[in-house]
Image (cartoon, rainbow, N blue to C red; front, side, top):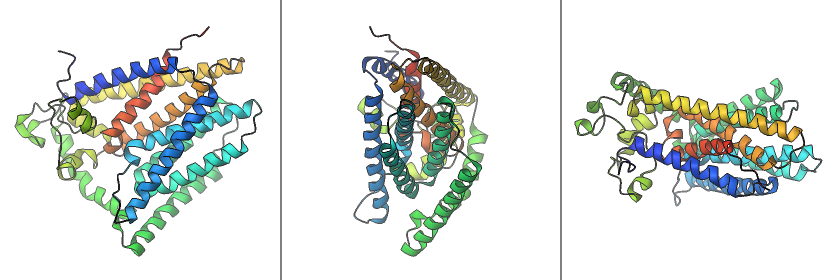
Length: 360
């Protein structure tokens, strides 16, 4: 009975452990050839491009409902695209002509940038950061001259500023405030200070002041659901956790939308759990980079059996770091709910490389 989660924190930990073990076994059961990894990454990239495109159209179509897919799945799109780029780098090394494939992936990057940025500006930040980080890791892994030059970075910055201006103009012309970057920034400005003040005044080493939460003194002031896995997972297993049905915007947004993740996790679980969570993030990054170095050394010695795993690891590390940065230091929603499942999945995709079963 002790394995049945008694609160959101225990449920998250158990889910993360089981997910990591499952992916670790899966990565060794499925033959991860480079062609197979590339195929899966391409299918995933195309599917998410279509999904984000539908979401962008929904913003301006009164007959469609926007679902904000970039929050939960934005890091998965980054993972799939960078995995494709890593596979292209590997194929270039063995003399395969990848021009058509490279152009197609670049086209997907442009489309995702446009439609994803239309839906959420924080996604655009994570996306650009992830691409820059991905190209940096690729240049180091394959000992190539970095594609990141001062000129190109400057052009990217100019393009981002231009995109913000374009969306502001478009929102004015079409009378669609949802497209306005300035509206989002003003909303954050109006609410973030009050939210941060509430969090900092009521956060303890373990948990928070029960009286400050929506549920009040009926809770223990720990794992009240401000940070949780998707509600459908909770209800699927019939777990007796508090959930925010119908009050998401007016109550949970105080933690979920208006503060960075370090404050959201700190408030719901306490400073000690926040510290342990940050240790987990750093540990995943350290292990992933160590494994990536081992893959590179084996590839340079002529071992071709791990090329698919190497491409997969590069995509996983890039997406994990980018989501951690934006979720922990920009907006809690990018590392909460379904996005938390994505984050734990990416962490498991990195840790899963620790176990490599030799095949005869």
